[in-house]
Amino acid sequence: MARHTAASSLWVAGILSIAWAAQAQSPPDRSAPVAQRDRDRPAAASTPGLLAAPKKDKAKEEAKAKEEAKAKEEAEAKAKEEEEAKAKAEADAKAEQEAKKKDGDVKVTEGKVPPPDEEAKVDPADAEFVEEKGKTYQYLGLRGRMVLIPQFMFGLFGADGGKTVWSPQFGPEFAVRRNGFEYDLWLTYASYSMSNAPFKSSSDPDNAYEIVSSSIKTISIGSDFLWSAPMNPRLSFVYGGGAGIGIVFGDLRRNQSYPPNGVAGDPNGYLPCRDVGSPSVPSQPSGQYCDGDNGHYGSYKEPSWINGGSKPIVFPWIAPFQMGLRWKPVPKMAVRLDVGFAFPGPFFFGLSAQHGLF
Image (cartoon, rainbow, N blue to C red; front, side, top):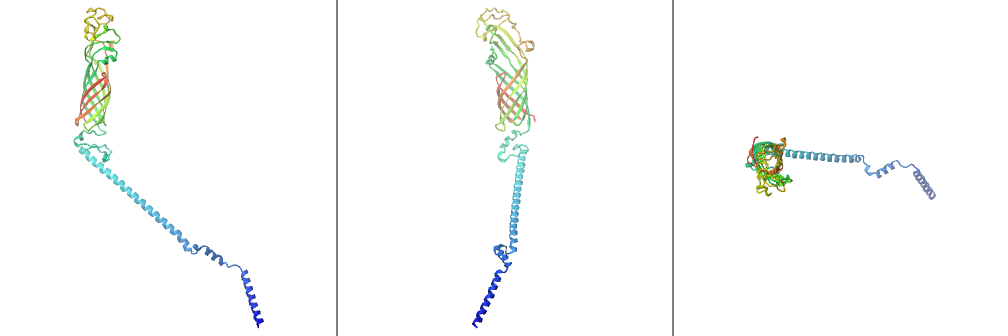
């Protein structure tokens, strides 16, 4: 019995050994790799989970894009509202300025409405005196000038003697004015009269002194070009220059002279010779007085350039600089006071009065 039991045990053990060996040599279970892959990729264990993640990200992007589009629309709407409000404010300001312009309170440049802080501060009482920008004004009036020709000016042109001359000038003028600039067309009569005065060339001897007098006059045409710097609606500082040309008429008389005591001295005391050798004056180192070098005696008149003489036929007016004040006592009237340098001159001062035409 014991031997049978032992044999049975051996038999069972052999069977188990054979079964274990067979199991060890059997092919691997094909389901194991799948299970292993499932363990290695736990996130892929469920197919719905793999599809849900991309859909969730796409939804976020769409929501963000909608928010950005909405913000852009709101910004554009706000900018449009601001632009419309600005345009409305400018239109209101322009309408207000046009109303003031009609009432005569403020002159506004057409097509441009100045900001409130740049508006001209004009007293209603002075509104009519303000000139509109871009508008042309025309004036007609009279002018007067007084030109000073000092005695030293003769010396600058190589002459001895002479005397200070005051030359009055007057005539009509027509002014055209726009944007603070004006040109004045003028026609003037001028007198260059001079009473008897000794006169000779600086290079000639004392016996060459002649007593000269002038009744020369000119009629000139020319123009002044003036700019204005307003000081207030009624008063402006003006500056500029002018030029013109004149026709000469009148006489230039010349007469030889001699010293009363026969001795050279102050030429302002010399007397006119009556004729050649009359009176008879003793010869001096400088030469004989009342000689026969020329026929400048009695009623002798100097010929013009055309006839071979030294009297000019035309005479210029050149004023390189002048300045003054322009005052409007009433809206359609202007008075101008001028001073300046000119040839002939060199100094002049003047007064003009003009009345507005348009």
